[in-house]
Length: 263
Ligand SMILES: Nc1ncnc2c1ncn2[C@@H]1O[C@H](COP(=O)(O)OP(=O)(O)OP(=O)(O)O)[C@@H](O)[C@H]1O
Ligand SMILES: [Mg+2]
Image 1 (cartoon, rainbow, N blue to C red):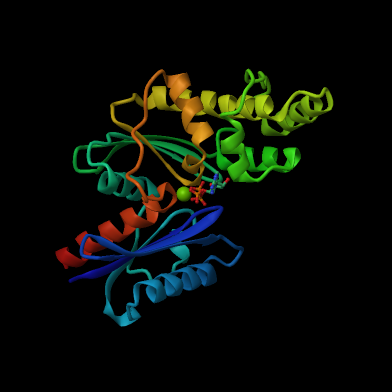
Image 2: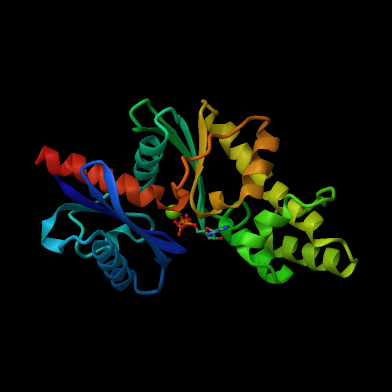
């Protein structure tokens, strides 16, 4: 059985996946830091330990994400666009459009029936429409990230958050709080604001079904609900137990397997 690994150094979180053939042996998520090389080493060692694998038994390692050039032990580094495509295809082989909502940027990736990259659009200039936007707002509202998702399904009409800029949207949220507007209405409004941004990106690339959402923000069911209502379309959920946040690292490990076999 061939052992390969993927290490995804994202702007916000670092992830590692170990594959034994096509089977996931380990998956680890940690925070990113100002020392990506050290973080990469730590996250990789944790994953090896979890899998019970010796480092010298790994045939090939692919680094991806923002810090992909800073993975000292990687045999190659590959753009996260390709990695997210491959990773999404592993869990759901009918996916054709992958929406990756990470901590710092949002990407719409269109893939072929084998999970290979065809086209993409990216928002990397602005926090609105990314995980950072929700992190900022959660802080203002004194809520945890998981509470945002839960509140979305409580009673009340979503507020309209008019400002596209996260800095101004933050002031808007503070005003709403001080007017006594119930938190679930504000949270829903924030999810709809993010969804509006993301939905227009999806429309730009063109939405070939099935649509899947990856990245840490995909763990927020409220965001998924708001995106579905903006697009007037259903997204395909991941299988039970599959974590949408490790999809990039998984794709990297799958590409590592291809490259090791080609050698
Ligand atoms: N349980 C959760 N519920 C809601 N949001 C979550 C949860 N866990 C993580 N997140 C969000 O996921 C984001 C990180 O996701 P991810 O790991 O995909 O980002 P990244 O790869 O570091 O960023 P990028 O791809 O933009 O460089 C954080 O901004 C955080 O807000
Ligand atoms: Mg990412």
